Image (cartoon, rainbow, N blue to C red):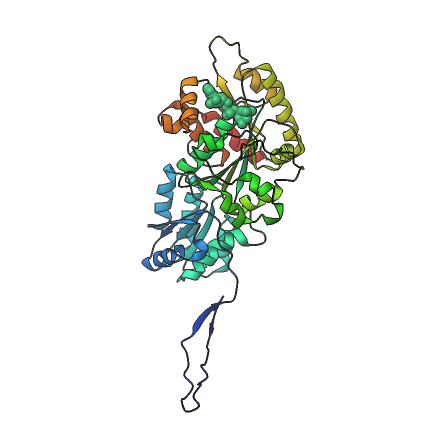
Length: 434
Ligand SMILES: Nc1ncnc2c1ncn2[C@@H]1O[C@H](COP(=O)(O)OP(=O)(O)OP(=O)(O)O)[C@@H](O)[C@H]1O
Ligand SMILES: [Mg+2]
């Protein structure tokens, strides 16, 4: 709430009368800064648009990306038919209650799960408020709204004691060494940032040998080792300083890839790093090395989603099955661990078929990525992503689709005509069951 503190200046000179000073706005509640979220506002009035514009310039929204357009719910539905939704949508409605609710129902059809919706309206009515809550609307502001109302609403979505943490953690791990798990993780992180415009951090947990720095053509002086060896200093600001920016929305928490020390960790060594990342960045991709230790197991079990990368041979099949079985039983209330096949189709190599994998793992692979030494070799040696080597390549498209599935975005929208088409439907069912 804003209070106006009416201050009265005490005249120094007793001969002068005391002059009332202009009221000063004092915020009596502390508003925690918003994390690096994407916000899109669809306004109906210039007043609200101006308030959102001013809010976007507030220091507390310094890390957020705010976009404003006019047209209310109709424009929002139109926009999200073909593009992924941001972390937050602000929707202004000038209309009657039924129209507000109708607009929201249409938006729900094209809105990705996880997007938070704030409605700005003119009607002050409990029944409407209840209906909005029932539809999952996070906040309802009554117009006219001021700048600070918008700032408080956006920041409050992420700082309330019961707020869901903003970040989603996706752990990628190989069923065997060298199967391309890191390559897959880096390409997915890159696609999440580029194609979904979500702020993401790729965390390279292969401290001794990690290749994320090479793959993104970065050589940062600091990274994950600085954090894990200074557990007492970890908070969002500290982690922020360790990130190196790769693209507009992508940052890297790099591995040192040096051997001057050894990297033995306790099971909970990465807990506070992940908490700090989760609190400030919408999407965290973990490049988990292929090893089975207290901390790798804990990272996998505690991730929001898991992608196991396997090559099509017997050892990979056995290991992938063991990992998926264990993770399934330790996470009975989560989406099942996902897996993809990589390096499929090496000439003259006998391979285990995707159908056999599907039978053993009781789920089809999320994607089948062909073996393509020319494409992957060029990318690796140039420090580029597959989509940078060849944007129109089918494999680049596969990474885009994996990014969408793993962030829970656009599953319904793109179901038809997609290479992963049948899987989207299946995943939706699995999610509902879960
Ligand atoms: N589909 C593919 N076709 C051809 N080469 C590939 C493919 N996927 C990955 N590679 C190559 O395989 C090599 C190993 O990849 P990567 O380092 O990503 O594997 P990893 O599973 O993370 O290995 P490690 O166990 O060492 O962490 C790299 O040279 C990479 O370019
Ligand atoms: Mg690796």
